[in-house]
Length: 258
Image (cartoon, rainbow, N blue to C red; front, side, top):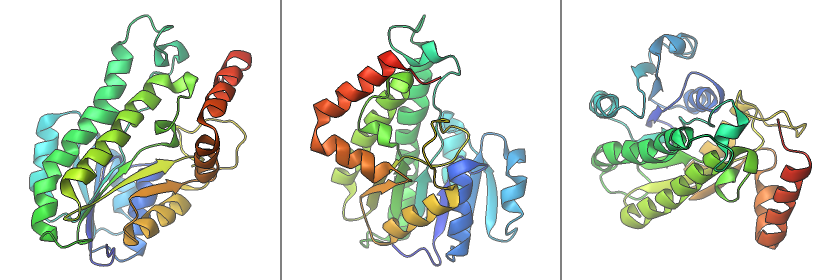
């Protein structure tokens, strides 16, 4: 997958991980980057980086008409990066399955982080296949997941459930589309964003994260672990999954994250 000359679309481009991806795509020679956000006026700063190559698009991924319009407007895309997502309500109880008064917020998280992401893939797969021509490595989907897709962080239980579903969906897409399309899942951890928790763990900048992710995509990696401690968490889970689970539950009961 060559980034130089690629045409990319990044959802949730106005800040954090999405903005970092746009910046690094430009740095690495992408011919065009469609930067998207629910409110296009928030894209002014990212568009100012290169008015010729950054194309702003209004896109709320949960709205079908927005998805269709984006696929029509960005019909030359060769790299789709599904980054847009939500962590769940600010009220901590809403992010749990028992403490929440209803599961309405859980459904909203699942709709955004899983179903809408799956629909984005479905909307753009015909575009990617057309532009990649079925040539291995010529077009790709990268779903920005979370290391939380591999375990349950109880304070963000509904988010982890949705990202876990998205990870399985990513594997299913790979089964259907490989080798015509590269389908990568990005398991992030320890990246400095507005959504990251203030837990004292050193965090990687969104630009550093983007360099890691895009380098891995160029190497056609399917499972990408990026961030200051993503590989460390992955290895701990692999070593003893039940011990890792017990530690998360014990920490949650003794000292839950705010």
